[in-house]
Image 1 (cartoon, rainbow, N blue to C red):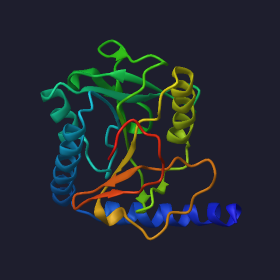
Image 2: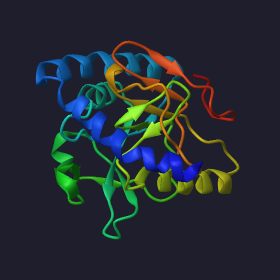
Image 3: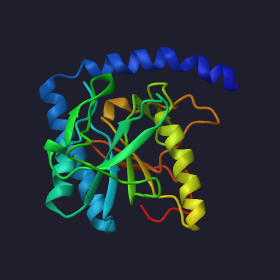
Length: 213
């Protein structure tokens, strides 16, 4: 069954990337602003003081409105940088767009000369995750590199060492990226909620989070 599910992923990745790319730049901008506004309201209502958020690549939902909201509202903002091992991410604090520079895969990444490392023990109040597809039960289809799945495992270990609870993981995407069921296997990290320009979908996938969504 696991092998069957894995076999479905490449075709779904191709189809969902094409679907996302088909949105016009104006549509993506409009939907990004709406989704980020919805997520900002959620973060504000729960009092989160620090978030880990991705930097948009190509046709992904643009997180710039959310990041600028965080800066304006005193929410510390951490973004990822792909490590040279090609398997892990390091997190850095950014306080302005000057803290970024072109990085791996064409993604803007923290500039070590202008951004501060968060350190291995940093536990964000929420993790904002990109993807190609999501479902309403928390399934996520990533790009296949496994960065977020490995970060999930590392964060779980850091939280366990401190005797705490995992922060919520929130998938951020367009409504058009929702599917009936994402093919997943035992290594995939699940989302506690999916936020789109139209709604917040609470999956109820995990219990024991530090935050009641």
